[in-house]
Image 1: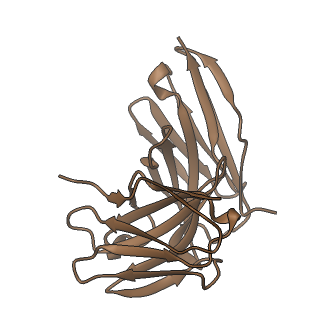
Image 2: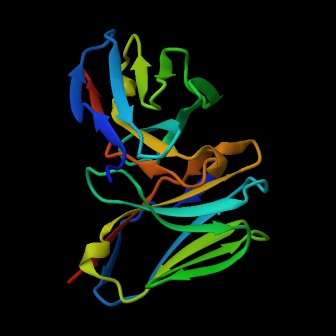
Length: 114
Length: 112
């Protein structure tokens, strides 16, 4: 049973560019959340998607946007990249009724902004 | 002040030691408390999940929650080198029902 899969695993961008990260949830899960983890820090909540709609959003600017597709997979888009956007971006999936509590995380996409 | 505080370590112990990891928090609305383990270059993996106050045991791991003190702990008995990882506490509840609030993580090294 495949867990959460994310792509790409690593990528390097320059300031001002745009990036799209992709996530396939664990089989049977219908909710996808995205987290940003800076080096040496805990993950920070970006947003959660359920039924193709953003259900809750953390303290991230509008440069961060997302999408959920009918098959529950999701994308995270970041525009106008800043050096401070360099981080590990984690996707987590869950079942709607579990709220935030039982998340399965992917291995992450490591973004470096130069 | 962060909502969740966690000592970053690193914490270095000999194999077989009992390890104690702790977090404090400020939001009294938190009701769900979790511990995640994160190996280098991997995503966090759920270890323990507790609702409200009390203790929960799973093999060598024991999680404790003291809501009156806003303090949670994870104990690891008979620690093994394979337990070397970063341990993240996480919480949810109240306005944070759809998101987890994480501590910054404690790096643990178990020496053979």
